[in-house]
Image (cartoon, rainbow, N blue to C red):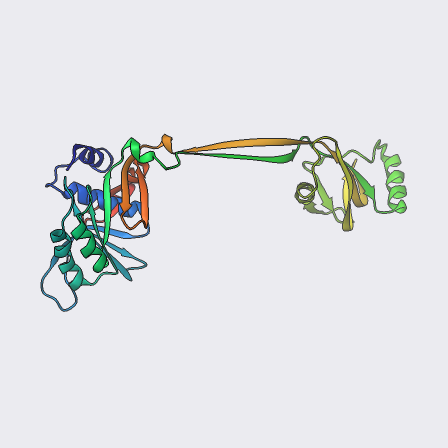
Length: 306
């Protein structure tokens, strides 16, 4: 195993002594788990085909879709290309166990013979190696997202429109008795609409907010208009009920511009995982590895679960 691969395993999975090749197998298991967290990913199982007596050691096994699909993975931490012999030997296990998919994963690639045999037998070949700075070529490191929206600048000014002249006359008569001063001022933060008996019905803000959310906004001039309710509502002003049919409004608007940068550079690119048929090409970051470990059964599990 390269020193880079070993350091990645020690720093992000576990600093432990394992036999040659095991850390690479376990790194591959974690990568497959990170790529699809709903999979059950196991390291180092002995499996037999149905009706077969010979067990096969499988480096990484994946069960997915509630165990209805099985994936077998052979891992080779080589400093040279994997040849046809390795792929052919793995095919012996595949032919007996009959998984839904099978992968060979290595660091340096495959010979022409290995690629040809794998293609014939529908075995997927993948590369898992240390990520290098050159691997950023052709990849997006930063995404700039710029958006703007128009927002109401301050609380709108509203004036209630009485439902009828009779409502105005009754309110004024009662207001004079109570020495009230105005029919236009009201608290629009903690006020309710009422029924005609003075019982609270709806929070005023919960009714008005959707109305204002749907109104057009003019940046260069005040927005003014009138909204009419479907039925009469009642508000309290100076302790008195006033039946209203709607309200007029005026407000100023402003344009708010927001910019967000999604920067892959804030994460550390550690590994490159690539299936050579082009079906997968993924950068594996520190955050993808840091959350996983292995339980006693060899299953990849979250670190906070053990």
